[in-house]
Image (cartoon, rainbow, N blue to C red; front, side):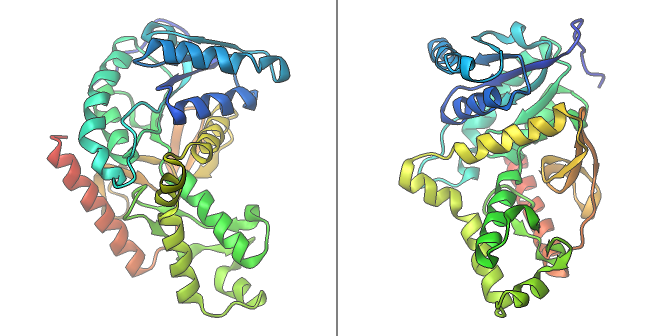
Length: 322
């Protein structure tokens, strides 16, 4: 199917945020602070909420870079370079991300056709949970080329992993190179096989720092990363600052055409024996979204868990008729 394109030229300094709840507002604030854009339009089913957030954030502009921030409608985002979608039902303390699927698929079935109708040429960045399911839904309903429909995926999970490893080893988290892959959720996989600290294999560096019980330590760290969101939700009812910084980083990579490698969620086409599902694997990201995936070494166990994660996501998509 040929995607519909807009008659408007893309404004490469414009971003849109759909959904102005905790996550959307935090993302909007982080994007205002980034200096990447000169224009931002906020959309929400509650127009007053969008207007309030636009007013509140815009009052900080004199302390940042010049930027026009306003509430708008779908026709206002036809020329946006990036459309960040955070709209959806909130995750409750006793819910998994996948429990949200039925409610949020219905919401996307309302949002995406309107995006398609206005002929957006920008990149769709899906943040709403369950992000892998909704990334797939957005790609299929929009008809956009798959490279420009991406989910925030395990970018935040990977940051949490780097932070946890860095704390364990007392080292700068930017020197930790490791990925969380698969679902952004309970079946996510810490890909320890390729993990390293500035090129030094993880286990070797651990021993350099006096840590020798590798299986126990890595299992503990992976479990803590997986449960981070649940712990935060239990304590403060929602997570939003971490994901807002993740969204800012993804937007930065796109707008600066950095060709950076991030574990975003996107459609799989046979890689690792996985097809017709969206999940997170490291990929080179540029101005048009996903350019190519980057193969990483996986153990037999990691590969089996990745395929199981994909199968579980495919079952859920089947359940909602996708």
